[in-house]
Image (cartoon, rainbow, N blue to C red; front, side, top):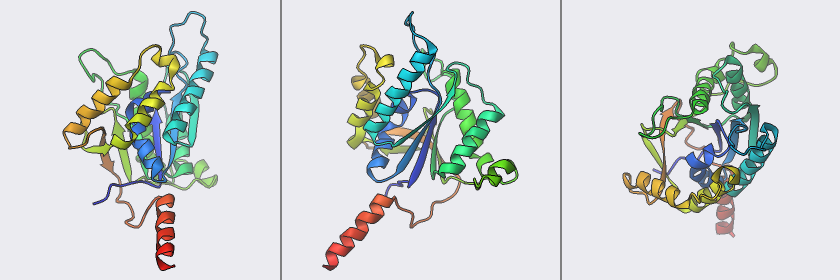
Length: 258
Protein backbone atom coordinates (compact mmCIF):
# COMPACT_ATOMS: atom_id res chain seq x y z
CA UNK A 1 0.00 0.00 0.00
CA UNK A 2 1.36 3.41 -0.97
CA UNK A 3 1.71 6.12 1.64
CA UNK A 4 -1.19 8.54 1.85
CA UNK A 5 -0.30 11.97 0.45
CA UNK A 6 -3.09 14.56 0.79
CA UNK A 7 -3.86 17.14 -1.86
CA UNK A 8 -4.42 19.72 0.89
CA UNK A 9 -3.16 19.73 4.46
CA UNK A 10 -3.36 22.21 7.32
CA UNK A 11 -1.05 22.20 10.32
CA UNK A 12 -2.18 24.25 13.33
CA UNK A 13 0.16 25.29 16.13
CA UNK A 14 0.59 27.75 18.97
CA UNK A 15 3.93 29.45 18.15
CA UNK A 16 6.44 30.02 15.37
CA UNK A 17 8.94 27.11 15.46
CA UNK A 18 6.40 24.58 16.85
CA UNK A 19 5.84 23.14 13.39
CA UNK A 20 9.54 22.95 12.62
CA UNK A 21 10.11 20.86 15.72
CA UNK A 22 7.03 18.74 15.11
CA UNK A 23 5.99 18.27 11.49
CA UNK A 24 8.34 20.04 9.08
CA UNK A 25 9.78 16.80 7.72
CA UNK A 26 6.29 15.57 6.85
CA UNK A 27 5.28 18.94 5.40
CA UNK A 28 8.37 19.05 3.19
CA UNK A 29 7.76 15.49 2.00
CA UNK A 30 4.15 16.18 1.10
CA UNK A 31 5.00 19.51 -0.54
CA UNK A 32 7.46 17.70 -2.82
CA UNK A 33 4.61 15.43 -3.87
CA UNK A 34 2.42 18.39 -4.81
CA UNK A 35 0.39 18.90 -1.64
CA UNK A 36 -0.83 22.40 -0.88
CA UNK A 37 0.02 22.92 2.77
CA UNK A 38 -1.22 25.72 5.00
CA UNK A 39 0.37 26.63 8.31
CA UNK A 40 -1.89 28.28 10.89
CA UNK A 41 -0.15 29.97 13.82
CA UNK A 42 -2.42 31.01 16.66
CA UNK A 43 0.09 33.34 18.35
CA UNK A 44 3.08 35.29 17.10
CA UNK A 45 5.29 34.09 19.93
CA UNK A 46 5.49 37.71 21.04
CA UNK A 47 6.50 36.89 24.62
CA UNK A 48 9.28 34.48 23.69
CA UNK A 49 12.32 36.60 24.47
CA UNK A 50 14.39 37.56 27.51
CA UNK A 51 16.12 40.49 25.76
CA UNK A 52 15.67 43.61 27.89
CA UNK A 53 15.13 45.95 24.95
CA UNK A 54 12.77 43.72 23.01
CA UNK A 55 9.13 44.72 22.59
CA UNK A 56 6.16 42.47 21.87
CA UNK A 57 5.47 44.26 18.59
CA UNK A 58 9.05 43.95 17.35
CA UNK A 59 9.26 40.32 18.42
CA UNK A 60 5.99 39.46 16.69
CA UNK A 61 7.24 40.94 13.42
CA UNK A 62 10.57 39.13 13.73
CA UNK A 63 9.01 35.77 14.49
CA UNK A 64 6.51 36.05 11.65
CA UNK A 65 9.35 36.66 9.23
CA UNK A 66 11.33 33.74 10.64
CA UNK A 67 8.28 31.52 10.22
CA UNK A 68 7.82 32.58 6.61
CA UNK A 69 11.46 31.76 5.90
CA UNK A 70 11.12 28.38 7.58
CA UNK A 71 7.99 27.60 5.58
CA UNK A 72 9.72 28.52 2.33
CA UNK A 73 12.52 26.07 3.12
CA UNK A 74 10.01 23.25 3.51
CA UNK A 75 8.01 24.22 0.42
CA UNK A 76 4.98 25.48 2.34
CA UNK A 77 3.36 28.33 0.42
CA UNK A 78 0.99 29.80 2.98
CA UNK A 79 1.31 30.92 6.59
CA UNK A 80 -1.73 32.33 8.37
CA UNK A 81 -1.13 34.28 11.58
CA UNK A 82 -4.11 34.76 13.88
CA UNK A 83 -2.21 37.16 16.13
CA UNK A 84 -3.24 36.01 19.59
CA UNK A 85 -0.90 36.87 22.45
CA UNK A 86 1.81 34.38 23.35
CA UNK A 87 1.28 32.90 26.80
CA UNK A 88 -2.37 33.95 27.01
CA UNK A 89 -3.99 31.57 24.54
CA UNK A 90 -7.25 29.99 25.66
CA UNK A 91 -9.57 27.50 24.05
CA UNK A 92 -12.46 29.90 23.51
CA UNK A 93 -15.56 29.60 21.36
CA UNK A 94 -14.28 32.55 19.36
CA UNK A 95 -10.99 30.80 18.60
CA UNK A 96 -12.82 27.63 17.62
CA UNK A 97 -14.92 29.60 15.13
CA UNK A 98 -11.80 31.24 13.67
CA UNK A 99 -10.40 27.80 12.98
CA UNK A 100 -13.67 26.46 11.60
CA UNK A 101 -13.70 29.35 9.14
CA UNK A 102 -10.19 28.49 7.96
CA UNK A 103 -10.91 24.78 7.70
CA UNK A 104 -14.01 25.44 5.62
CA UNK A 105 -12.10 27.89 3.41
CA UNK A 106 -9.13 25.61 2.74
CA UNK A 107 -10.85 22.21 2.95
CA UNK A 108 -7.80 20.23 4.11
CA UNK A 109 -7.90 16.47 3.88
CA UNK A 110 -5.44 16.29 6.77
CA UNK A 111 -5.40 18.61 9.77
CA UNK A 112 -2.37 18.45 12.05
CA UNK A 113 -2.96 19.44 15.68
CA UNK A 114 -0.92 19.53 18.87
CA UNK A 115 -1.68 16.88 21.51
CA UNK A 116 -3.60 18.72 24.26
CA UNK A 117 -3.35 15.75 26.64
CA UNK A 118 0.44 15.71 26.75
CA UNK A 119 1.06 17.63 29.98
CA UNK A 120 4.40 16.06 30.95
CA UNK A 121 6.42 14.97 27.89
CA UNK A 122 9.45 14.22 30.07
CA UNK A 123 10.69 14.42 33.64
CA UNK A 124 12.20 17.85 33.06
CA UNK A 125 9.61 19.56 30.85
CA UNK A 126 6.01 20.71 31.28
CA UNK A 127 4.12 21.22 28.05
CA UNK A 128 3.39 24.89 27.36
CA UNK A 129 -0.20 25.92 28.19
CA UNK A 130 -0.50 27.53 24.75
CA UNK A 131 0.27 24.15 23.18
CA UNK A 132 -2.52 22.51 25.12
CA UNK A 133 -4.99 25.30 24.36
CA UNK A 134 -4.06 25.24 20.66
CA UNK A 135 -4.50 21.48 20.50
CA UNK A 136 -7.91 21.50 22.15
CA UNK A 137 -9.20 24.39 20.05
CA UNK A 138 -8.00 22.76 16.84
CA UNK A 139 -9.49 19.35 17.68
CA UNK A 140 -12.83 20.91 18.63
CA UNK A 141 -12.84 22.87 15.37
CA UNK A 142 -12.03 19.83 13.24
CA UNK A 143 -14.69 17.68 14.85
CA UNK A 144 -17.52 18.20 14.98
CA UNK A 145 -17.73 21.95 14.43
CA UNK A 146 -16.39 22.15 10.86
CA UNK A 147 -18.99 19.74 9.52
CA UNK A 148 -22.05 21.03 11.41
CA UNK A 149 -24.13 23.16 9.03
CA UNK A 150 -26.50 24.58 11.66
CA UNK A 151 -23.73 25.53 14.09
CA UNK A 152 -22.56 28.66 12.24
CA UNK A 153 -25.30 29.88 9.87
CA UNK A 154 -23.32 33.04 9.14
CA UNK A 155 -20.43 30.98 7.76
CA UNK A 156 -22.88 29.03 5.62
CA UNK A 157 -24.33 32.32 4.39
CA UNK A 158 -20.80 33.38 3.39
CA UNK A 159 -20.54 30.30 1.19
CA UNK A 160 -18.29 28.39 3.58
CA UNK A 161 -19.75 24.92 3.27
CA UNK A 162 -19.27 22.35 6.03
CA UNK A 163 -16.14 20.27 5.60
CA UNK A 164 -14.98 16.96 7.06
CA UNK A 165 -11.30 16.09 6.93
CA UNK A 166 -10.14 12.56 6.22
CA UNK A 167 -7.56 12.46 8.98
CA UNK A 168 -6.38 14.29 12.07
CA UNK A 169 -2.62 13.97 12.68
CA UNK A 170 -1.93 14.62 16.37
CA UNK A 171 1.72 15.55 16.88
CA UNK A 172 3.89 15.98 19.99
CA UNK A 173 2.08 12.89 21.23
CA UNK A 174 3.14 10.04 23.48
CA UNK A 175 0.52 7.75 21.93
CA UNK A 176 1.68 7.41 18.32
CA UNK A 177 0.08 4.94 15.93
CA UNK A 178 1.42 6.33 12.64
CA UNK A 179 4.91 7.24 11.41
CA UNK A 180 6.10 9.24 8.41
CA UNK A 181 9.50 8.46 6.91
CA UNK A 182 11.33 11.81 6.71
CA UNK A 183 14.75 10.48 5.81
CA UNK A 184 14.78 12.40 2.53
CA UNK A 185 13.55 15.67 4.08
CA UNK A 186 15.41 15.63 7.39
CA UNK A 187 17.91 18.27 6.31
CA UNK A 188 15.08 20.58 5.21
CA UNK A 189 13.54 20.18 8.65
CA UNK A 190 16.83 21.15 10.29
CA UNK A 191 17.36 24.14 8.00
CA UNK A 192 13.80 25.30 8.62
CA UNK A 193 14.36 25.14 12.36
CA UNK A 194 17.58 27.13 12.00
CA UNK A 195 15.51 29.94 10.43
CA UNK A 196 14.12 30.68 13.90
CA UNK A 197 17.25 32.52 14.91
CA UNK A 198 15.59 34.51 17.67
CA UNK A 199 14.83 31.23 19.46
CA UNK A 200 17.85 29.12 18.53
CA UNK A 201 20.46 31.65 19.59
CA UNK A 202 23.87 29.98 19.44
CA UNK A 203 22.37 26.50 19.64
CA UNK A 204 22.41 24.39 16.49
CA UNK A 205 19.46 21.96 16.57
CA UNK A 206 20.91 19.54 14.01
CA UNK A 207 22.34 16.91 16.36
CA UNK A 208 19.29 16.75 18.59
CA UNK A 209 16.84 16.63 15.66
CA UNK A 210 18.82 13.85 14.00
CA UNK A 211 18.89 11.89 17.26
CA UNK A 212 15.17 12.35 17.96
CA UNK A 213 14.10 11.44 14.45
CA UNK A 214 16.40 8.40 14.39
CA UNK A 215 14.99 7.16 17.71
CA UNK A 216 11.46 7.70 16.41
CA UNK A 217 12.14 5.86 13.16
CA UNK A 218 14.00 2.94 14.71
CA UNK A 219 10.90 1.26 16.07
CA UNK A 220 9.26 1.11 12.63
CA UNK A 221 12.27 0.53 10.40
CA UNK A 222 12.78 4.09 9.13
CA UNK A 223 16.12 5.84 9.33
CA UNK A 224 14.38 9.07 10.40
CA UNK A 225 10.70 9.60 11.16
CA UNK A 226 8.05 11.86 12.66
CA UNK A 227 5.28 10.30 14.70
CA UNK A 228 1.58 10.99 15.04
CA UNK A 229 -1.59 9.69 16.51
CA UNK A 230 -3.62 9.43 13.32
CA UNK A 231 -7.38 9.57 13.72
CA UNK A 232 -9.55 8.60 10.77
CA UNK A 233 -12.69 10.69 10.40
CA UNK A 234 -13.54 9.32 6.95
CA UNK A 235 -11.79 7.17 4.42
CA UNK A 236 -10.25 9.15 1.54
CA UNK A 237 -11.44 8.71 -2.01
CA UNK A 238 -9.18 6.07 -3.61
CA UNK A 239 -8.64 8.09 -6.74
CA UNK A 240 -7.61 11.21 -4.85
CA UNK A 241 -4.06 12.30 -5.75
CA UNK A 242 -2.07 15.51 -5.41
CA UNK A 243 -2.36 17.62 -8.55
CA UNK A 244 1.38 17.50 -9.31
CA UNK A 245 1.38 13.69 -9.13
CA UNK A 246 -1.67 13.41 -11.38
CA UNK A 247 -0.18 15.79 -13.93
CA UNK A 248 3.10 13.86 -13.95
CA UNK A 249 1.26 10.61 -14.62
CA UNK A 250 -0.66 12.20 -17.51
CA UNK A 251 2.58 13.52 -19.00
CA UNK A 252 4.21 10.10 -18.70
CA UNK A 253 1.24 8.44 -20.41
CA UNK A 254 1.40 10.99 -23.22
CA UNK A 255 5.13 10.43 -23.74
CA UNK A 256 4.61 6.66 -23.81
CA UNK A 257 2.06 7.03 -26.59
CA UNK A 258 4.33 9.14 -28.80
